[in-house]
Figure (cartoon, rainbow, N blue to C red):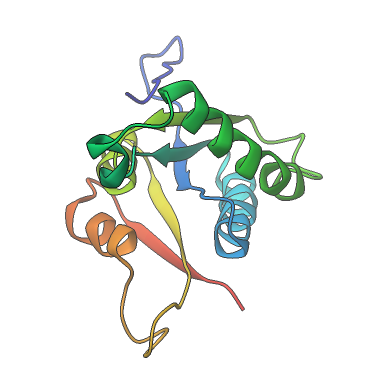
Length: 150
């Protein structure tokens, strides 16, 4: 799933993968990833993943294009904010139809780092990882940074 570039010497271009869902936490994670990429001379692959809700599978009312459009509309303002002033860092934004955790882990194959935001939702917000962050921390093929916003 992840695009890989190679230089003429055969070395892979370093890259950082960052997950985005349109939340403030994911905007902060993208901003951090871009700053870090700038420091290490890497590119950034921003992945927005979505899945059809199981309830829709029982009684479908939309088609895949509807879900994709909703995700894109949610991500566009967040990405515009996160990418402001990042013209010096090669950044690719991709929206994929797949569960977010596995999508990010697969995209992170050969990455320098995988960055995900932390929402701090729930009764004990901040004390437990969310499902995507937990999946990435346990399965990623590279170091994972869980960016805590705020």
